[in-house]
Image 1 (tube, rainbow, N blue to C red):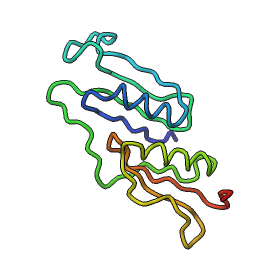
Image 2: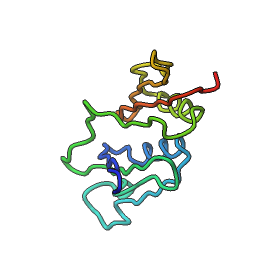
Image 3: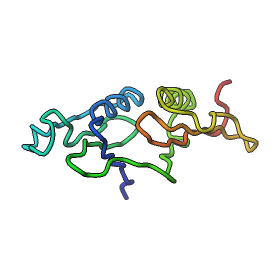
Length: 136
């Protein structure tokens, strides 16, 4: 079974967001403009469809047109628990917090695992963590 992949509808920031996430996660970024898709319902250089590929995180995004609703994320987190080496997860936490806000510092918990939460500059809420010795 294939896991669900988030598809973000953004207010003209899809290019910036996908480029940022590609840089954070070390992914290649594929972007297709409204003009490429023959769309005339928004700016020609707006992103009609874009995605991360060849990396550890799957994510799609597009700019909205007209009165389409944009991303509003409440009551949901994107979980990156144990999805990479602890050093990578720490780096991702730090990078995602740039221009965003830390909800709960990445820290060792009483049960021995480490985790933390951050809302990034585009409004996505991330839960990042790992078990075991992180080398600290």
